[in-house]
Image (cartoon, rainbow, N blue to C red; front, side, top):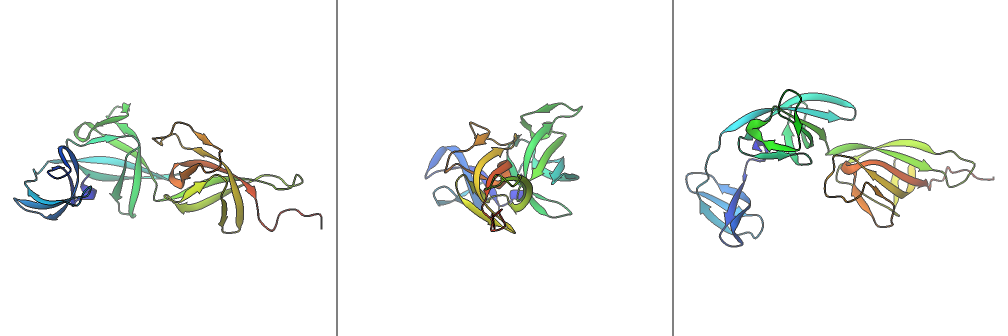
Length: 215
């Protein structure tokens, strides 16, 4: 997308002569100088300029939503689950595509940019994660907490977390529906790890010093 200007997909004569890899544009121009991000090889090549189209983008963030727009190469394929940097009036943010709309409320999993009317997204650079904390004593009740964390913060089953006034050990993780690359939606084995941007709800056992005591 245009928000990642400075990077292009090109074949690399050193490591990938048949399939495109991501290259960093070091020096633009008729014969641009580029560097392959996979192997570091630097070479010159002609970069074809591609027309861009404007796409409406709806961003969901912590229950609210607002409209923005993005300029995208017309032949670029966009799909649910992909992430990109979006420059808006509010801020520059990382968003994930949750739905691709072609117009007349027709939604698909993927499409070319010049076919897309609206991209529905949610912000994933900083996210709110719902946490249910179970008591470590039967006389207490479970309680719900909302955590504000970076989207790439990893939560791991079995690990102890200290956030604000909360101290807990993670016992389970449920993931969001718009995530990709997972074979299950619930994780409860020790060592299972999920980034915060993929988490629908955390479950944990209270480890705080304010837990119930017989004294």
